[in-house]
Amino acid sequence: MIRRLFACGILFVAAACGGDIAGPAGADGLTLEVAVSSPSIEFGEVDTITATLANKTSSRIDLTFPSSCQIVPYVTNLVGTIVAPPGGSRPCLTVIGSRTLEPHEVQTTRFLWLGAADFTGSTRGGRLPGGVYRVYVTLEAYDVQLTSRRVTVHLK
Image (tube, rainbow, N blue to C red):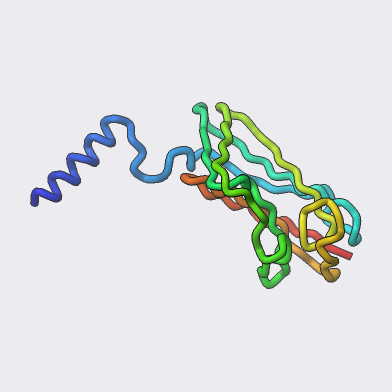
């Protein structure tokens, strides 16, 4: 009985103070989208992957990241296996990072993909076989995790 009263009291105080109990701060109102410069490329041709992070709110949003990787691109085959970056993850520095989005601000990050198994802007990651691939980006801050929709790219 006392526990229920205590829990109700906490909920009441949080609601009265404008606290958001339903989700992490900043999760609502952020969108992450992906686009590619070309839906069909030859190996070695540059396809620019553009990640667009938008704050759709009228409030400033501060994000804190556990590493230097803030927005990360991925390429999967049609089965869903990650083929780029190699091993399914990018090398990231273990340093705290941050990003601030002012009200209604839009930020873009670009990555170069040449049909290889990496995003170094070169083909040294090794050629991927021709076929249909899906490209997406993720954002993994401490309080916010977002994944874009997938965009199809044909690799010749």
